[in-house]
Amino acid sequence: MINFYGENDFELENENDFSRWIEKVIYSEEKKLDEISFIFCNDEYLHKINLQYLNHDTFTDIISFDNTVGNLLGGDIFISTDRVAENAMDYNVDFDEELKRVIIHGVLHLCGYKDKSESESALMRQKENEKMELFHVEQ
Image (cartoon, rainbow, N blue to C red; front, side, top):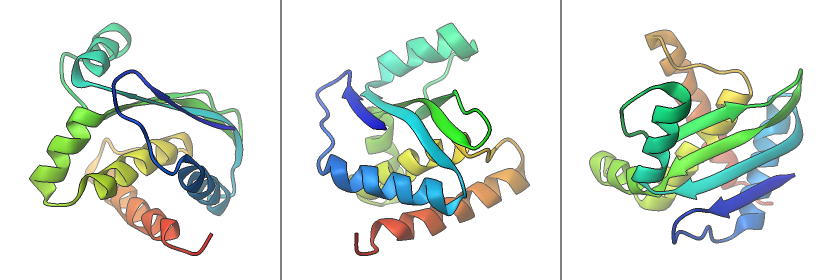
């Protein structure tokens, strides 16, 4: 099950399209879906979570809490729509494209991909690009 929640005024359009895409990505990684919740929020909300649970005093676009057991993916993925909007401007892409990248970044973390080292980051970016292409495939 995939859930979408809002802690700000953001509403995800086409939730069913996003759910099907996320499921397709999970299965393409030979994983199974348990329950993943996406919580859309603002910078301040995510900053508080970053401080409270990770002891990081920084703004970020995403924080993933992984509840995966074996190949059964589960977790909570918090996304700051403020950061997504700013990153979209910085990278000269539209908001929807950046949002898809951040959403799938969180799912890839649940699949076991990391991004702490340069090589991990490069693989993460490659996987993001590959999985974003799956959104455009006929459903």
